[in-house]
Image (cartoon, rainbow, N blue to C red; front, top):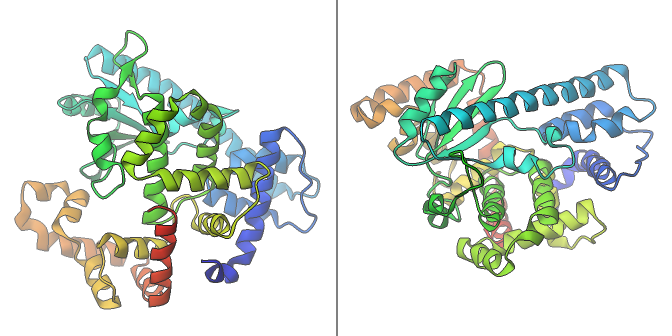
Length: 391
């Protein structure tokens, strides 16, 4: 993978500064930022990886930072603090209302992960994910609507999205994983392994289930489009604070059962290299570069190549174009749930989707050109890279 990244050395160079800033923050030491650093590019890349709040203190201590850039970092610190307090209050309210209605539920991912951070509010969280027991999903949706949430048009077999302006987003989970994810079968019955800590209906995963679930979440993003620094930092905090509390035999058995043992080992090594004093091997360096160039939500090229590996797209430009303009019925049902009841509307909704793409903000032609520029050699290299990382 290394040769592919040569044109992106500028991103990798700025990325290394971000990693050093996070590393010194973890160690409570001071980092001397290079005199020639471009703070605007630093902010842009940190935002791509959702780690602006984590490096803001180090940036604000630096000399020579333009006031307009300092203002960006200060505003982000204020926003994440405001968002976190609102999310924390909303979480308590939802737990109370769900419990009053006898709805067993479990908060997932970002909210639980933030509790392991040195400063929880600095762990940016776009959505609050909550898993609801089977049979209570309709009532849970009614509660969200009563609280002023609007249902997003997107729904799939895993979750339903709701939004409450200005910044409260809820993903109501029916399942933990997509059927193509590693760990799908392992987590299908995981609701029965949840346990209550108090007299509410809020449940929690076992330590081992939570640790492996977060590994599986990182793996999902890593192989579908790419993932960013924040997910690696999540793993670092869990590795440091949660893993020692786990039953190691159960943890290893769970990683084996989900097929994520090798991927977890690779993340362990990357954490040691980025945030401690580990030495890079070629394989770990390739993983680091891939993540650095992906951003927290990945990129179009990775999405295309990941889709080929999953069988979502054909291996030619023409078949990719057709699959993007006319997705399979199952994928269209995720975007337009009405198809589940009225499947005969599929041709009409294909037309609606095409017009939405033409007049919307997304540049489909750019996406197709980027995808079609990927050579067969790069596709094979991507496949080998994923296999090397256990995916």
